[in-house]
Picture 1 (spheres, rainbow, N blue to C red):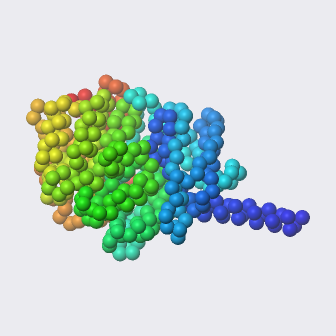
Picture 2: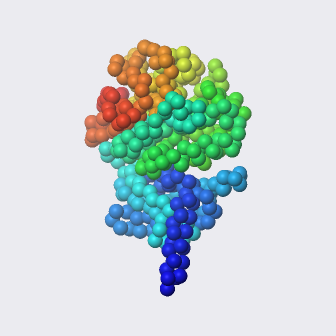
Picture 3: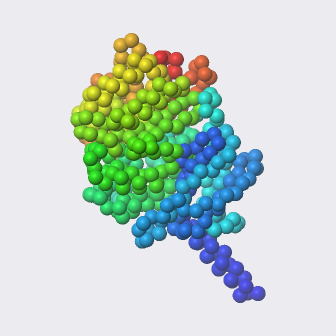
Length: 428
């Protein structure tokens, strides 16, 4: 009897330890629609992944998945389970448990997410924004890029998160070395604070130079297909570019708001273009066809200011094309969001005969401020410059006739810095 009990304890303990070691970080939701959810689970095993999920009302379903992609380097033994849970119900909170090989009493991971309302249904919601999560080991330890900000972000309630580029930093030619890039991603994904935040709500992401390639890299970067593949494996957006136009750009909607995620790197040509003809035409078509109360354009690189640093103003023809289009087509409700700069600010661009454009830059999550980089520029809204680590939250609320967007910036400890409000009816 004693030997059987010991065997049972050993088996249970072994399974528990295997389950805990099987996952790489915690499960993460990407794009979530009213009827589906993109899920990313990274594991160290090729066995089938079983998912049991249910609503708070108790409706339960189970399904089975296999690796969508197995990393080519055997030393990592890394397997990507990217799948979509379908036939979900709008405005429901789902809980999911993940099991290796078969449903048992001990899950290897858990995830909670909520589906949004049907598209164009007016409801209150909010989302978190941020950029520039610098390394926290090696050379940069002395700069103390504290990860406590991710604890504050986890506590700060919102419906989803948008990463606006430099979500990690490839350094010292790592962008040429596949193995080092995978190691860098795993280093971030297995950090408890980051992993806990990624598990806390759906995540969307675009990139900028440091998770794309070298500093200030443009479309001529020769390893961009590899870095694009790695980026797509570690995030769970709903779309990546167009059928014949590669990149990380894509569109999604939440309630009565449309989100346009831009790629400011893959098609960049120095002194010629930042987005490229195909991506810009895609954006203009989407904006023209949109009936959303607000149209949020997210770019890793700034759009409105022209400061001497990287921004769309470095490409005057493309900048003029977009600005002229917005005015000529009377595109309403546009607000820009960006990262990159290692400081936060709100830019206001006046336009004759129509409403002013605004751009909120939120940077950096953990990186450091470059002295002198935040000098006063025309258009900065007074009191919005912030050079310490920060994240933002955007809230949309009110009935259809009085839709309001609130922009808030927070310190790394979660305390507020500033707040600005905009009514949709004023952005016409």
